[in-house]
Amino acid sequence: MNFINQKNKLLEREKALANLKTMDQAAINQMIATLKKEHQALAYQEASEKNNDRQKNWHQLLKQNENQMSLLNQYAAVQYQRLVKSTAPKVPVLANTLRAFAVGGGICVLGQLVINYWILQGIEVKTAAGFASVTIVVLTGLLTGLGIYDEIGRFGGAGSMVPISGFANSVVSAALEFKREGMVYGIGAKIFTVAGPVILYGILASVVIGLIKFIMM
Image 1 (tube, rainbow, N blue to C red):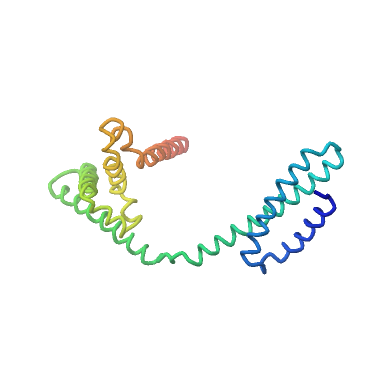
Image 2 (cartoon, rainbow, N blue to C red):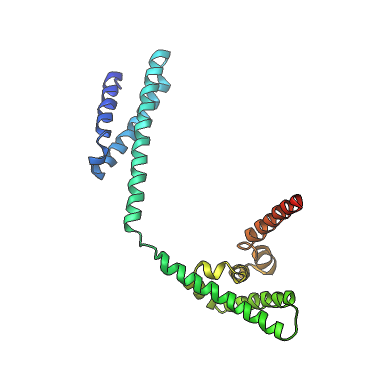
C-alpha cells in the first residue's frame, strides 16, 4: 500500500462526504464496504511498520479512516430514524388520553362506590377504604385470570395500570406466566417480577418522603 496514494484517496473521500446528503444509498453502502477493507489494510500497515515516524503517519491515516466511517454510521443512523418516523403509525394521543381517563376514572368510581357502601353499613372511612382496595385487587385478579383485564388494558392503557388494579394485574399475570415452572421456582420466585420495581421504589420513595417530613417537623 502506497502512503501517498492512500492519503489522496482519503482526501478525495472527504470531499465526497461533504456532499453526503446528495448520495444515494447504493453509493453509501459501497463507500462503507471500501472503508472497512481499507481499515484492515491500514491497521496491518501501521502494525508492521518499523519506522516510528512512518508508523505515526499510517496511524493518522487510520484515524482519518475511522472518522469517515463514524460519519457514515451516524448519517445512516439518522436516516434510519427518519425512515422509522415516516413509516411508523401516528399515535392517537387525544384518543388514548380519553380512553385512559375513562378506564382509570371508572376504576376509581368503582372503588368509591365500594367505600360508600361500607360507610352506609356503619364501617369507618379508613376501614371502608381498605375494603375497597381489597375488592378491586380481588376483582382484578379474577378478571386477569379470565383474560378480561388484558382487554381492558389494551383499551385503557395507563388508565388500567396506574390504579391499584394495575399492581394486582402485574402480580397475577406473572404468576400465570411462570406457573408451568412450578410452585416454588415458577410462581414463588417470579410472581413479583413485574411488580417488584413498584414495591422497591414505592418503599424507597415513602422512606425519603418520611425523612423529609421528619426533618421539617
